[in-house]
Amino acid sequence: MKIVIAPDKFKGSLSSLEFCSAVEDGIHRVSAEVDILKLPLADGGDGTIEIANYYLGGRLIEVEVKNPLFQLITASYLYAETSQTAFIEMAEASGLWLLKEEEQDCKNTTTFGTGEMILHAIEKGAKKIILGIGGSATNDCGIGMATALGYKFIDRDNKEVKPIGASLSQICSIDDANVSSILKQVEFQVACDVNNPLYGKDGAAHVYAKQKGASKEDIEMLDHGLTCFSEVLTAQFNVQPQTINGAGAAGGMGIATIVFLKAKLESGIQVIKELANFDHQIADADWIITGEGKLDVQTLSGKTIDGVLKSAKIYSIPVAVFCGQIELDKEALNNFGITYAQDVLSRSINLEDALNNSYKHLSEIAETFAKKAISSEI
Image (cartoon, rainbow, N blue to C red; front, side):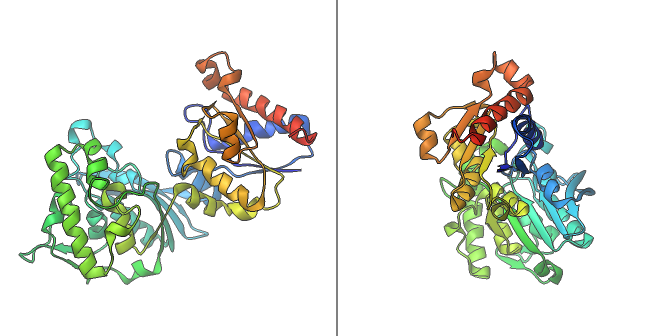
């Protein structure tokens, strides 16, 4: 029997790799003959860089870049020399977490530092760059990133604008004469888990700018800027930004990566599955065990478990889900294609016990599952 263990983390208690070990321990207490393949996953959120490194086998590279307020900081990205692949999280240079609450003001923040990280990775030898675009402090539609890569954004007075959100409505043209030709030789893959359009009521400014320090007036101004800049992009690059799902991700970084990096946007879980060569690896499995902290309707919308279920369906492989907490009834689980499900909380004394002893509880859940799976009770 071959069992693939492919979980996300239990936030606050177990990493993806610890989940794998706990389940492996439980299964092997029943039978050491079971062939186990550990394929830890992540959906683009916290901990994704560690999982990327599990498959890439790279090392962290530190680089001095500008933060969202143009102040120098040290950021890091993952680089694997053997595959010439870099994994960059824009939040390292352009993240909201870098700013104090009183500093958060997305009309004046920039993605310039993310561009500097990309440039550094290319100079390091990267031929493929995976870019995670969550957690940004910005609404500059990626013009900061593009400026760092050699693009110039010109106003009606033929002057270069400051690459911040407040400048978007001033841009009349884009000069790409100084963009290195090396950029075209690099493949960009972008992990993006939102489908927001660039502007409008569901766009970058109206949905996300408030949490980045924008006032109501700022939001209207930023949305107007995104609308104006969209017209510039259409005129110069023959794209229709408003028709592209995810264009408004990370303050417009979604469309920026498509236009300036020729990138493709994919869900975070899909990016990690590709790194893991997931669909090929699971093809001959008898069971797949997955899980994460909580299983609810939201979990099954583009997150790790959803990604596993989609792959399992290709090969008609039954899926067992072990979670910290399950908020779906048996009928809902069946409808989603989940064959077996158990949670840690229901077998724990209380939440504290569930968090502190999650490894033990998870291992016991796996042991019970293995007994049933091996004896064909499920």
